[in-house]
Picture (cartoon, rainbow, N blue to C red):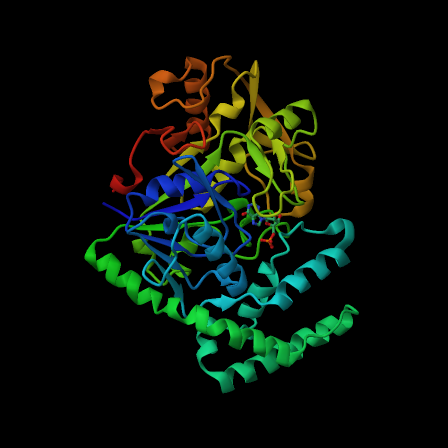
Length: 431
Ligand code: IMP
C-alpha cells in the first residue's frame, strides 16, 4: 500500500472534492499542503452536500485525522466560520480530528483587503483572484515578515512581528491612498482568536512521520490546479502557491519519497475561473451548454466558469510537470448528447505548431487549438458504475484521452454521488 497525492490537472474545479472523499474513506490521515480558503471542495455524502474551503475533506468522515500543513496559508477567522458551518450540519471538528501546523503562515484581514485593492488598481488587467488574501499572505511568508501560528503563543514577539509587518503594509496602503491598519486593533484580534486556535496546533511533521512509520495511509489533498501553479501555470494568471505534487512533501514536512502515487483530477472538458489564457475556450452556445449542464459556478465566489473543449495538450503538460501517475476523469456525463466532441491535440502560435503551451504570456494568449474531432454519444453515462454501462463511443473518447495525455485513467466519475465511480485501478494499491 502507498500514500496518494491528489492534484488538479487543469485550472482547478476538476471535481477533486468527490474523489478526495472517495479516497479518504480508505485513508487514515488527510493533509492539505498548499493554498488556503480560496479552494472550494464540494462533497455529496448520502444526499447531504458539504462545501469545504480550508478544511481537509477528511473532516466529514469519522475516525480520520485531518491536517492543515505548513504549506497552507491559514485565515483563522475563516477556519472557525467553516467549523461552525459544519457543526450546524452535525459534523464535529475537534483537536481529535484536526491538527494545524505550528509553522503555517496566517492570512490576516489586511491581506484580503490588499488583495481586493490591488485587483481594483489593476483594472482590466486584473487576475481575477478569489479576494481571500492568498497572494499577499504568501508574499509576506516569502518576505519573512508573516505572522505564523507559533507566533501567537509569544506575546512580546507577536507584538514586534506585528510592528514589522505594519511598517511594510502601512507604507503600501498609504501609496494606494487607502486607510492604514491600526496596530492595536490587529493585535487585539489576534489575541482574541488565539485561545480558539491553540488546541488544534501541533508539530504536524512529526505526527505525519509517526503515521508514515506506523504504515498509516496518508492522502495529500491538493487545491486549485496545476495550470494555476506559480511556476508552471499560466503566469501571472495563477495562484501564489505551487500546486504540483512536489509541494505535497514541502507543504506537509514529509520527504518526497512519502508522497507515493499522484492522481491528477481531470475534467472531461475544460473550465477556468478568473482571467488568463484558455486556448480551447468556447464563447458560443456549446460553451454555454457545458457551463449549464456542468453547473459551472465557483464554490467560493459564485462566479460563472469559462468553459471549453478538453485540452489534451495542456493535460499532457501538467501530467509531466506534476508527476501524475494516473488520472481521475470526472464529469463525463456532461458530454452526453453531443453529436461530436473536439479534443485539442496541439497549438498553432503565429503559424508555428507547438506540442505544449510555452511560458510566455504573449505566446499563450496567441495559442490557437488544433482539434481532433471524435464521435459523441446519445445515451446517458450518468451514474455508470462499470465500463460495460458506458456507450462504446464514450469508452473510445476516454481511451483516446489516455493515449493523448500518455497516462492511464485510474478512476472515472459519472455523477456527484460518490458511488457513481468506475475504479480502474486502486491508487492506494498502485506500488
Ligand atoms: P487566488 O488564489 O485567490 O490568488 O486567485 C488566483 C487565480 O487562481 C484566480 O484566477 C482564481 O480564480 C484562481 N483560483 C484560486 N483558487 C481556485 C480554486 O479553488 N479553483 C479554481 N480556481 C481558483
